[in-house]
Image (cartoon, rainbow, N blue to C red):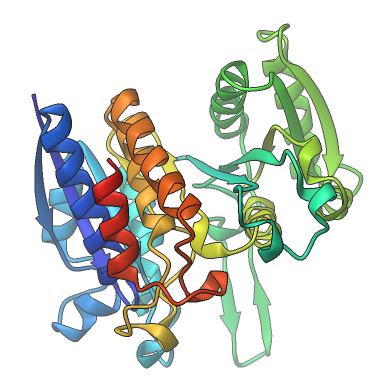
Length: 349
């Protein structure tokens, strides 16, 4: 079976880390006799530099026709002067919406050998292995009306959720918990926000279909504090768009570096897989970026997007082997280059 994978290197360090992910996937394909067909397309600032819109029609068409999409990063300060709908970042929101990827999965774990990179004490971090399930297509990022009225110097964003939106992402979290520690923490602000009161009610209803999964609720501020004090107490964290954006980055920082964090965005069609670290323009082109986020995103693509579990495990173990050998990129306090680390992973597969 042939698998059509669309690569969107994007901006900043995106092309560098996607190059290493592609090398690893090509080795996986050869090792497991899988036929991966890759095609690269423009997005974000890279598209704007080519006098194209942030999300060219040809890029969207290829993504919609693919089996999975692997993205590097979107964002370029050269275009910060443009209105929000014309900036590189607008392409990511539009792509997510077009693909219908409503559930964003962001794992965070304590990696052996990287304990000293965490701001937490080793004994506090020990055993941390959690995943944030973030609703991705609702809330403040998409709610209408939204505007910045410069004449009145006022701005408005709308926080809006409906039962079906909450229910479908909650089921993703509960299904995932069944494969892990069978614990879900749902995060909201139900003591203040009506949207959170709806969120909690719907999650409670969904939980009735999962009697084997333990459900608890946390307010977002309490959860943020608990992440810093007892990260190992979490298994699956379920939350809405804005809260999930913030909490997943906090979890990544706790575990040592945003460069280590992968993500998967899932819906009914092709999934979107991308590292969390962003475009990091200050280090772009220097061959010092950490490719682990992209490599592990590729592993999530294999497992969650293409249903190739053995292949995903092989790639994850290769990343572990490279780290266990002592290789460290600059964000982890080392001098290993992006390409050197990627090469070590390829050899370890």
